[in-house]
Image (cartoon, rainbow over all chains, first blue to last red; front, top):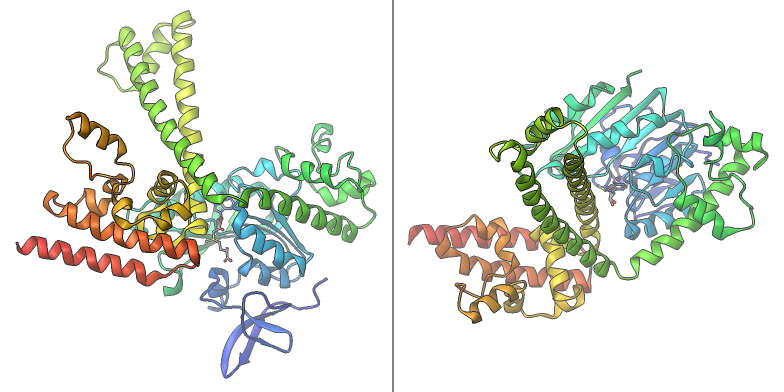
Length: 210
Length: 282
Ligand SMILES: C[S@@+](CC[C@H](N)C(=O)[O-])C[C@H]1O[C@@H](n2cnc3c(N)ncnc32)[C@H](O)[C@@H]1O
């Protein structure tokens, strides 16, 4: 389904970009079938372009929570073998459907990520990667509740948006509390604050505890 | 893997040619935990290879999402209005029930305690008592209503950036939803003059004023926003005018273009700072 090896770096119009191979989606630059992964529009793209590995490679199976209009999902699907893409809002889902028209390895699911039991009859177990970017309250709880889809060697890539948890507490306090809560169920491998395009977001890479 | 879970699989007893029941299986299905569905589907005879399995699943989930997404997106601002009204109804009911609960518990343990500790005392002292059963079930109701309310709030929070991105950014998701609901939809809100927007939701206060026991009719729901509620009293009129002016521009952009215009928000913040610093100097 996907001939592309993975993501790589490529110079387009004199600038170095991280790229994947697939049909263009959101007006990104392209060259020889490779498409720019715009890190100002994708938190995962921004992390990968800092040379951080999250375990996204060919043949992995992914559960993506908070798929939105499919900007990031489209790149993930260029690489992975299967992407279960959960989005609970009908509006962005329509764009996501357009993206998955040309990418049949996307399984679009109009579901609430806080209720994994409503898609456990579809999404398979033992997945390699859980990506979560929901930006609604209870982000850590959602990541914990969806742990059951991960294989014991799988990875979690979680983005925490501070403002989604509370408008009043300072972001660092939110992050600290989130990490404490998360480490009950996951072993935290790495945390990284996102750049100015994605202010007050923390990216976390973790693996499930047995 | 138990038999019961196999019966939950989305493909269980599914006729591959029946799209409608396929969509229903995708949308309404349920299972407590995931399984290796692709292998099970092959074992069960639903598909002969993983590729065939995934291709069927893709097609079916695509159709199911399309069907339900288009049903829901026909009138998003109406759905949001229902949601925010329900949130407000839930809050009102929660308040009433929790007052009732405290009073009722008070008869048993006195009114000085908070609810959780009172309930603890109650369950120790009055085990299997008929009346206390009712108190506990009232408490359960209250918890369940409040969790329903929280779910709806999250729904509104995630939906508003799609429905009215500028309003959402400037007013926050809940106030933005209230304005849309009070105006009777985003289109109507976009077409109202900002003076009307400023007093939206003041109707109740207005009636009270006409009956002669409230101060001013100008306090619409926008007064609940911290731009105004956390500012000195003598500035609130000015602030409310500035705020509603920008909100009504936001509503228009949201209705006609739907794109987020971050400048609008920074303009508003600047304007508010100006009013406040002028107010301080006075
Ligand atoms: C910040 S956006 C995700 C952007 C996307 N990850 C990208 O990079 O292209 C968050 C999305 O999560 C969705 N969302 C929020 N809460 C959700 C939930 N409980 N279940 C499913 N989707 C949710 C929102 O509707 C929104 O589209």
